[in-house]
Image 1 (cartoon, rainbow, N blue to C red):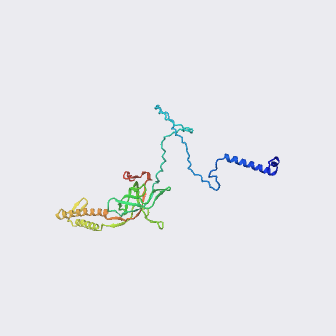
Image 2: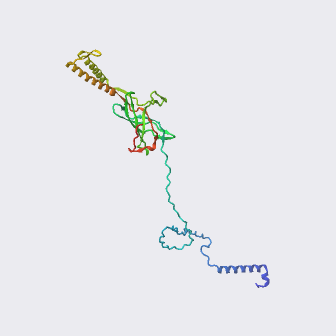
Image 3: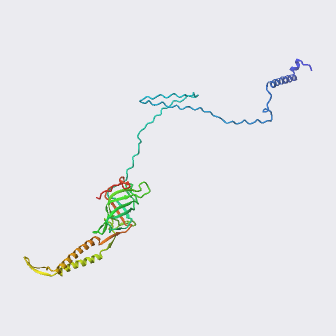
Length: 331
């Protein structure tokens, strides 16, 4: 086939010309590109990329010490420390100032106080008998004593006092100095508070709320035990015999300014009767005093309710631990 100009202008020649140009271009691209790797081969899956740990590097800033405060006496300047160059700019040092002052302590809460004349309900722990001098009175507080919403005396505290027989009223009189002792599980255990007061009889029914006729009367009522029956018989016999000896003496008549009078005769019989009568009269006087003193005694059983009437202001700030508390004098 002869290639002429008419051939390239024909449809077939144009197709051949376009095909030749495309083949030439493909050959030039293949010559410039490197050989295809296995990863670009068709049908081969690319391997997954390996995940490596991330490392973060942070550059710190060196702490700069604050400038020393100027004193009255100049101190030797310390040698400057070598500062390593930092990549980042150093922040300005802030001044640090410390102030020293007195420590403020909170005000302590005042101790509870109760006014004069408080009645502390108590009951005896041990039985009391008046045949002993200054019988000790040991009681237990049965109810809390409050004032202005604060507990002054807790229930369970001990009260200690002394009692003596009042023979005119046949009661145990307990007045003067008392001591209240705390028996609790807190820090007040063993605290002692000296007070002045007296014991009053308690005749109050808590169930019905009624008060008896002896409620609030002074002294402690109890059982009266008579022990002077034999002494009363001896007193009667001694008085009788003393009078009989005087009647049995021999008499003689004498005349004086007031007339005649009978006087004992000076005989041995009258001397014996007079001496016996004097001894019997002295013995009768001793028996009379003993009956007046020890003719009976009073027994107050354990658990007897009573009031401790306080004759001073109750101030808990006066309470102390141990025996270093001064005992107030009786009013």
